[in-house]
Structures are given as structure tokens and as C-alpha cells.
Figure 1 (spheres, one colour):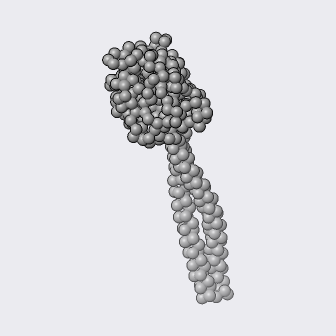
Figure 2 (figure 1 turned 30 degrees about the vertical axis):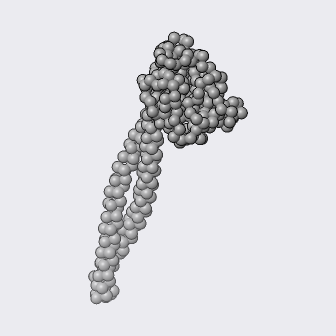
Figure 3 (figure 1 turned 180 degrees about the horizontal axis):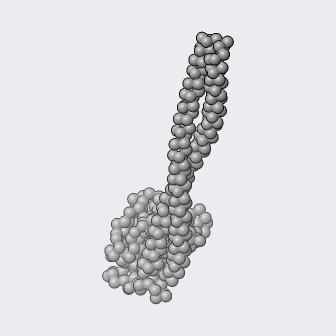
Length: 350
């Protein structure tokens, strides 16, 4: 929704009455504010998710430490049991040597030695069973550790993705805040630069330049601001280098980079700065509610507040930045309305 109204605002801010500008700016401002709140809510959810991830990761890392300690104990137990088995086997070897020495027919010593041998063999079996059980437990423990380590790796990856998302949301929010400030500027400042009949803007004062003809009497005799080829008419507008020409009465004048752009009449510069899709733009108040708009300039030669004479350079044509070819956008306005260029200006029949 905000993009839709922002597009309307971009396309009408210089070419509509201040009433429309204020209305559209208010809608865009409200919608942008809602988007910022929505972004804040999303950022809060992402932050909460990051906190959950950190908590889960901390819990798993603690469990991993416990399993590591348990694994060390099991490995130590298995090592000790192996040592006990070895000792039992050594004992059985000694017993067999003694039996060989005393002879199996020795009815006093032989039974005791046989009993000791049976006991050691029984111990070996019991310890072997315990070792096997502990080995199985160790395998399960290692599998659990591996699973936890994989889970921790996934949590780290997930956290990285959420951090990237949070950063994108922060950047997007900053852009929305910047856009909101621009909307405030368009709502509060731009209308004061444009005349209208609704009493919401600063009224254009009569021109007070000596030697200047009354502009209303110059209809059809004014000269274009730059030497070049005018793009005008419905057939040309289908493939216009500037989309705004499709629905506005202004013209795009193709011109060579470096060509001087001149004021079409005496007046005062009321706007000279970069403005959205129109790039470097100059607006001149010529008095009697006449305004001229020069956009897509390559550079400025005049600033806001400067007074200019007819034919005085105000800027230069630059390389194509926002249009598909070099040139400028020009519009002639009175009382907040765009006037037909072909009715007011001398246009070459080339």
C-alpha cells in the first residue's frame, strides 16, 4: 500500500496542487508509520527467537559438557576393567605354573589352585560383560553427543540467518524512517513552493524585473530552456525516456551533455536540490503565479533564493542517470496547473 501511494506522491508532488500533495503525503505517512510499526514487531519477534536460540544452545552446551565428563568416566572405567582382566589372566598363568609344579595328584594343593583358577575365570567373564556393556553405553553416549553437536551447529546457522534477517529489517526500517522524513518534507515544505488557488501555499508575487514583458502576453513566443529535440505528443510518449511523460504535460528535451540550461524568464529560484525520480531539479517562480520546472539536470549553476534573468544559465545537461538518454525534463506551470508547452513555447519543426 505504501509503495502505491508513494508512487502517486512521487508522480504528483511537483505537478499537483498543494491540497493533493498534503492529502497523499498524509496517506503515505500513515501507511509508512504502520509499516515501521510492523517492522518493529517483526524485529521484536526475531530478537525473541534469537534469545530462544541462545538459551537452547546454552542448555545443549551444558549437556554436552556433562556427556563429555560422563564419557571420560566410562573410558576410565573400561581402562581399569581391562587392567583387572589382565591381572586375572596373569593370576591364572601363575596358578597353572603352580599346578604343573605340585602335580594334579596333590590332593592338598591342587583343589585350592583349581578353585582360584575358576574364581579368576569368573572374574574375567564378569569384567568382560561389564566392559561390553560400558562400550555399548559409550557408543550411545557418543551418538548423543554427535546429535547434540549437530543441533548446536544448526542453531549457530539458524542464529546467523536470523541475525542477517534482523540486519535487513534494521536497514529496511531505516529506509522507511528516511522515507517518512521525506514525506514530511513533501507535505510541509513542497506545497509552500507551489502556487494554488486553495490558499494553502505561499502566493506567487508579481514579477518586478525591469524590461520583462508580461508573461501572459508571451504565449507562443517563449524560448525553450535548452537547445535540443523535444519529445512531445501521444505517439512519442509510448516509448518515452521518462515515464512521467506518459501522464503529464511536461516535455523531455533531448540535449547534448554539457549544454547550458537557461531560465525561460526572469524570476527567483525557490527549489534547487535532488528530488527522487527527477534527480537534480530547479523550480523558478516567475511571478503572476507562473513557475518553471527543470529536472534531470547534470549540475546546478544557481541555488535557492537566487534571482535570475531571462536566458541566464541555471544548470547543465548531464549524462543520462534517471532517463534512457541525455536531456532534461521541463514543465511550465500556472496556478498549480501544467500548461501545454506547444502553446507557450517556440518549438522547432525538425
